[in-house]
Picture 1 (cartoon, helix red, strand yellow):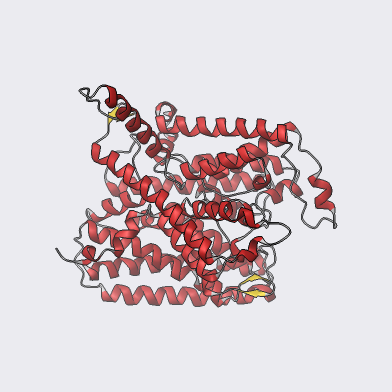
Picture 2 (cartoon, rainbow, N blue to C red):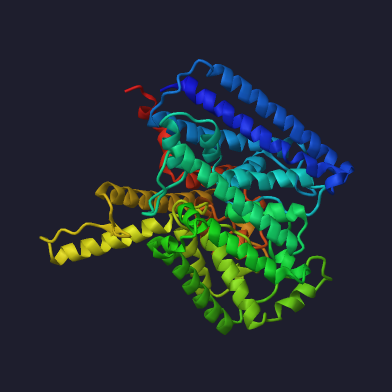
Length: 536
């Protein structure tokens, strides 16, 4: 194992994170809308965090200054795994140094900070913060740093790293680990060029989304922030009611919902397909089986939930922020119009399937069929090669083809058929890998649920708003939401809830679960195998 090389690359990652922190500093200044009395601690907290990032980067680079830039897959795996762990740790510093709080009367612990940082970088979107709109609790500059972690995580800062810093075949391995490419539609070319294409596409989408949202009346701060979250399929927001805040307070709210929904769909699409779309060849996208399945599932889920919800009278508006006492109860009796309900359902289905986690309504209060569909969408996720989480649709397509092949083999044992995807044959090793991944993912959800059932006290469910009988379902959705990088789930982690109620031990475990899901399990777990670190 080439430890010097690993150290050198991790030092460069530290520099990248430190530079990203600097971009949040202007939002503390009055020129950019900040209240200096409230933002001072955020400003200096970011400076202190940046200096530590540079110091860590300098030390790591010095330790690896004599490293030979020749490495194998093991070094690539180690660099990717440790880069995400290092990013999460460095990402906690702005929260801790600025004195950010979970709520007005609850200081932020290290467990809270690591949870928020890991959620940002893994684009999970789960949060422990309960008062996002109160700069006395979390300064605007720190809140923007929180959104920046989505930007870096969605891009996969390893992709950015390949674009600017890597040399040789190691970059190829790292990019493949970062961007799962099971889809039959791929780009051809040198790995650095491919990484550059992904970087440019990602940047262009963020710029376009920001311009459109700004034109619809959002401040530059909100437009940038929600562009970061939508394209990265992360889900962090600057408001307690998420995107529902704009619907409740702005005339352009419905248009803002539609725009964010479109960019969530793009974020959940294979970036190779977006490249061909940008080249004026939409037929490549339309022929892709995974993308057709992606759009088909979005449409089918929207129709099913809309019809069942209209029958069950599920669709009510969010309570307007700052409304008089009792106003929420009055609004809860009001049904949305069919058009508004359809828009709400389409937005929520897109948000869950792309594992973004934005909310425009209390979907966890909808009928049981809707909740079951949401759990299935969390599991499925978006397309391979996208910023979405979940197990990826291409794996489920391959699983279905393998199941059909085995079913036919049971009554035609002498017939041998090749499993293909989009007309291209798929190697049996790939199919075996898919089975192994799905087994590990499902096993991880079950194991994590069992651990949370043991750790979390019953008192969280013995309240007026929750019931002890819902503990199993709530914690199952918690496990699935963090491993699939969706963020919000059902019950205690619903649209208006946060993870602040969980114990510190659970927050640390869930932080690990988010990273496990982001790196698709095997990339992280190999670091815990003793044989991985042996030279032979």
